[in-house]
Image (cartoon, rainbow, N blue to C red; front, side, top):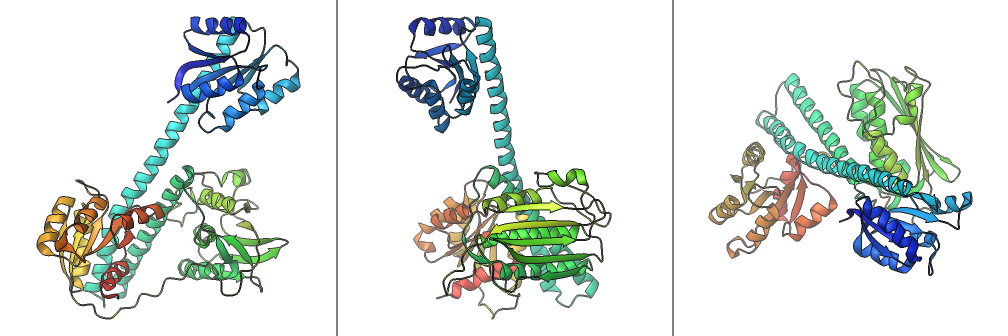
Length: 509
């Protein structure tokens, strides 16, 4: 923890060091001293001062070198450096000091009032920066918690619609259309939640790419297939001109699909009914050029430079129900940057459509037999073979979530019980002896991971299959669940198909 009023005074001249220490102590600061560069680095690391008052001329290291090392060390990088010198007084010397990382540079002799005023000014800036970092940390935590909490109501909403569909599979078309609308809007909400989580991960530096060879033509065809229904509902003409030859990049196929899918979704959303959207892929020198154009509402000239900024939005369309959170294009830019590429937008103004261009560095084609890296399309939902009735326990502190999952599984013929706390789950499992447990990770009395570990230790529950249900869906969350004894991890809201598949796994060899 940094001592916010502790100053390290570094000077090899004892009299000068003493004089500056006395000035600072009279001003109310706590002062420690060092007489060499090596001693300064050691004390900065051990004492963690708020500011180092650093003379340039030292017996072992120059003040420039000491400053550079302080700023390069992650443990001392945030320590302020006020560099002073009676020897290096020319403008290039000041530039050199600032380039080394110094926060300010003063020429000696220094008036006591000037020294104290400079120290106080730098400490005020440091305090403001600390407060800003804390606000950002709290914002990131809030986004992560908000995204997690928003997932909880989405599960029962989606599962309730699935249950209604199963209870009345031959409903009139208007009723089925209403169900489809609820599912579409729920899926849209899930995408917004995922965007919130991605913003939090990127802000905290927790996002990482899974790089593999990706053939962009195949990826774009998959993205276009996914967008076809949206375009059809808005009566858009969706056309594509893709390169005749394969164009390979080294990238994360899921994230590249997210990038292009986001831009294509925006084109649909910001283009009025009956508009036209064009997607093209071509080689441009050593780069792949993806261009997505529309004849929609366009972008005002003054907003072109800001649309990739977090929470920025441009333009409105009367026929659009939602504008989104203003984070999609920021995510696009960040993800493209992580791939070593670039993204740009252009528009002739309001009402004249928009064009977005993504450039990605091309790579060599993979060796024969290597995959394309394109995420496989989800198979069409088809009823599987009948599953023997199973004993299933559903554990979730949300009564609605637990009841909806239980109702869906009960409709399929399974014997289902519910519990809403970890303690009740263990007690009911011992009495009910379920073959499968759907277990929420966030329970009020204990984490679901502890419940899973407790169940695994009970000989009466040997062979039980545990499936984690969680609003957190990062790779780390999945790994933690598996390490705690779960057989599978599902991210909320889990679809009916995912629940059925988990039950079918009981019959897997």
